[in-house]
Image 1: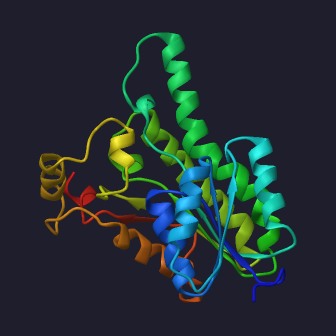
Image 2: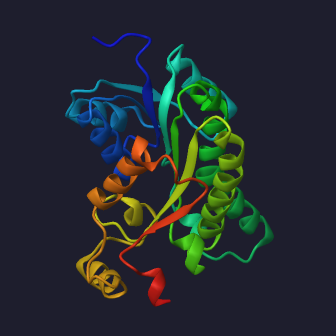
Image 3: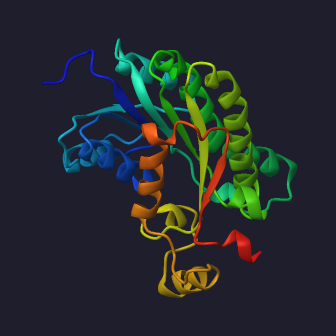
Length: 252
């Protein structure tokens, strides 16, 4: 039976896509998981589909706002946190070029809110819950931060990696590791559909041709990498940006 003393793994942006798959993988390992997202319906589906044996809780909150961050903290309650994954964000329409000053301001503000602040606010609020756990923090970046793609989105993800390096210095004295995972093209995650780019066979074929291994990523590729970074085996890896992209960046 789960008690309030059982530690949690918290997944920000865990209602859909890679975040949901990471959350489900952690429950298979027997860990209790708190999934955070904005859409109640998506959270409910993710909770119902969780394979267990770990238990799943959900909280509907906008992690990019102070009120949302406080809601997440309240949901954790008096439990400690051993793993924290910040997987919220996405490209959205703000990844496209704009010329009007107001449009530029709106696009860059939206990109930073959706990708940087959804990471910084909840992580900072929850960090005190990890100080006695030698916990693991994984931030989800993107290869866009490395290859100059994605406009404001790529820049926002670069900021996430920079934040992760700074956080690793502060957290390291407590035995906490902080790393940023930078995925390439991962099929079937709704990511490219949300940005209006589609997930068609021609696009997948084109993305596969840009890798060294001849295929696009699958959700399990990212899940396996996060599983290791959240484990005690990864205790001497911190402050890093780890690219999981089949070698795409190597070809640029």
